Structures are given as C-alpha cells and as structure tokens.
Amino acid sequence: MSHGHHHHHHKPAHANKNSERYRATLKVTLVGSVIDLLLGVAKIVVGFIAQSQALIADGIHSLSDLGTDAIVLYAAKHSHQEADEEHPYGHGRIETLATVGLGVALFAVAIGITIDAVNRLFHPEHLWVPGMLAIFVAGISIVAKEAIYHYTMHAANKYRSNMLKANAWHSRSDAISSVIVVVGVAGSMSGLVYLDAIAAIGVAMMIAKIAWDLAWHSLRELIDTGLEAERVDAIREMILKTDGVKTLHILRTRLMGGEALVDVHIQVAPEVSVSEGHQISETVRQRLIKNFEEVSDVMVHIDPEDDELHAPNANLPLREEILNRLQDKWQHIEVSSHIDDITLHYLEGKINVELLLPLAEIAHDPARAAELVQQFDKVAQSLDEVGEIKLYFH
Image (cartoon, rainbow, N blue to C red; front, top):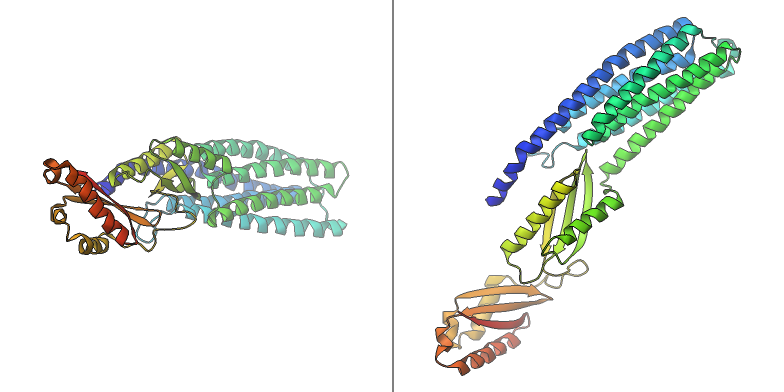
C-alpha cells in the first residue's frame, strides 16, 4: 500500500493551501460585497433624486456585483471541499460553473439597461437632466471600485483563481462605468440632453463584453480545454529531462478551477524493472508538481515502446498461458525442471523470455552451455509468439 500512504503526505499541505485560499476568497469578497451594497443603493437613490438614468444603470451594475459576490461565496465554499466518493476529482469545477453563471447574469443586466436607454432616446420628453449630486456619487464610486479591483486582483493572482479574477473585473467594470456616467451627466448638464442615455448604453456594452469573456473562458474549461501551448511545452521539456525517460508520446492537460491535471505516457528502456519504472514515474510527478504551481496532480503511464500508433502486443498471452505452452515444448530438456526464474519482455509483438538456471548445470562442461542454448532456441522457433529465449546462469 506504499502508494496510498504516499498520497497521504500531500493531503494536509493541500488542504491547508485550500483552506487558506478559501479564507482569502471569503475575506476579499465580503469586503467587496459590503461596498457594493452601499454603492448600489446610494447610486439608485441619488439617480432618482438627481434624475440620471446612467447613474441608475450604474447602481444596478453595483447590485449585480453583489449578486456575483454571492455566487462567488457559494462556489468558494463548495469548490474547496475535498474529493468524495461521488466527486473523485474534488469540486473545483463548481467554481467554473459559477463563473459561467456570473457571465450569463451580467449579460442579461446589460441587455436590460440597453433596452431602457434606447427607449428614452426615442422619447426625448423622458430624457432626464441630472444634477451635480450625480457626479459626486459617481466620483466616489470610481475611487471605491478601482480600489476593490486591485484588492481582489491581488488575491486572484496569489491563489490562481479565475473566479476571483472575474469578480475583480466586475469591480473594475463598475469603476469604468462610473467614469462613463460622469461624462454622460456632465454632458447632459451642459445641454446635450441625450448624453446621459448614451452613457447608460455605453455602460451596458461594457458589462456585456465582460460577461461574454467570463462565460467563454469557463465554458472552454468545462469542455476540457488544455493549458496554454507554452506551458505544455515547458512541461514536456521537464519530463524529457528526467533521467530514464526516453521519449514521451501522449501528453494531455486540463483545468479544474485554479488547478491543472496532467496525463502523460512516457517511454522507458524495455529492460527497466517495474520498481524502477515506478521510481521514474514518481520523479516525473514530483518534479511537475513542484515546478509548475498550477499543476496539482500528474498521472504517468509507463511504456516500454511507442504504442501510440499501433498496439502490436495486443493479442499476446499473459504469463500463465505462455509458460504452459513453453513447458510443453521444453519438458524434454532435463534442465527445464531446474529453472529458478523466468522474466518476460513484451516487445514488438513478440515475447522475449529470459531463464535463470543454476550454474552447477554447466560448471563441469562448458560445451554444455552452447548445447542448451541451441535446444532452447529450437523451442523459441516452434512458437510464433515467442521472440527469443536467453539463458542466464547464476
């Protein structure tokens, strides 16, 4: 069970990293949501008092941020749970799904604001002329939201969380939309009455763009899009540099939340033992986890030859069956009852057999060795699936 035990080592560290990531997500998002709530309410109330449609749109934007904060909190809570029986790979993709949800919700908000603003443009008598108060509130919003953006982005980069990045951009989009509001309100006050409504549409377009980016990125993750090409190349290079790895012929990566999983088939020398092959594969796994921060697990498949295009050994029999056939053929050779060990190599569609015999069999008669080699060669030739039979004496 050495393998199970070995996985055990990682757990506490991984769990720690996970709960630290969770706590950071929680803190950043809660701070953001309190500010979103205050700003959203302030903008909508002032928007009505000061008669600025753009500011009201902006307030709705702030409150939609509050909704996204809630989704983020929910996803963070569930996505950092450890793997369980129904979800053997953990719950990382809850975060991905939540991000798609955020995108869709924002998109809907954008459409709503646009429809309303366009309606007003076509009915000039409904256009509002906002006052100074609107500019003041929008100004506060710009400063507050830009600050939240930097605060959230810092955590997002530290914990490689796309969901937090998405949320940071929500905040920044709110800051940018407040800039548009200031322009719109100022324009309306200086007599260009329709500018406020146009500003509202500008805000909406921006919200839509962010929504699209978010949803698209996460949808790609849900359909198992791999890591960026240059990351994959770096991973390939590190695997090939590992001692004992001859070549690699299948390398696949996919994302789960902020983490990447790697699958690789590596080719080792055919004579490598099972334990050496395992040692090589563990070394590859450890190196990738250590050197690539996003990689959380690696599955290594060991091949003695390149089996990517065809599997020449597919129909070869396993040990018990082939030994029965061999014994039938070699039972007339008297030393066959003294064989100490048999090693099988499955290569290029044949089984190569190595026999370990007691040195005593040939100690007194060196010519006997050549004779035995010949006898076993005959056996090898009589069986299609056998390549060669080698004798070793010890």
